Length: 189
Image (cartoon, rainbow, N blue to C red; front, side, top):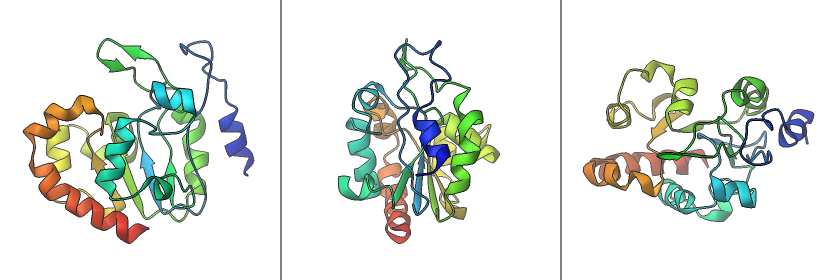
């Protein structure tokens, strides 16, 4: 395993500002074909050390059309959130990823992912890093854009049950976008 991966897994850089002991949660292999760029691990992922090990992960796997075995095969799917440690809970859900994490680790880890042909971008912080040209667009506008998925980057709403209202208000997402998503995921794998 690369020194940068070992170092990132052992990171305690934000220990003084995190609500719990640091536990970086991510999955990476240089041979991964798909990158999932999310926000930060949730409480359950922090407890288990497994990314998307919750209802959000169940929904994301269903959206992608993959099973748990494929999803957790690091040689196929890299999961690299903007913040590696659980940031804690705020008034309306989990806090944003710690701002120190991405500048400290992202470039070196992303440089290892030379075989990625598809990046699934989840959340504002990941969007601003991976798709800065979408700043200013609402989530709905950006996800519905027919060019979403072009160039190997696919913006998604967060698969959290907290987004059930958005999903209910936007039935086109399931009818149109998920068909394109499953096709590009199948092609990438």
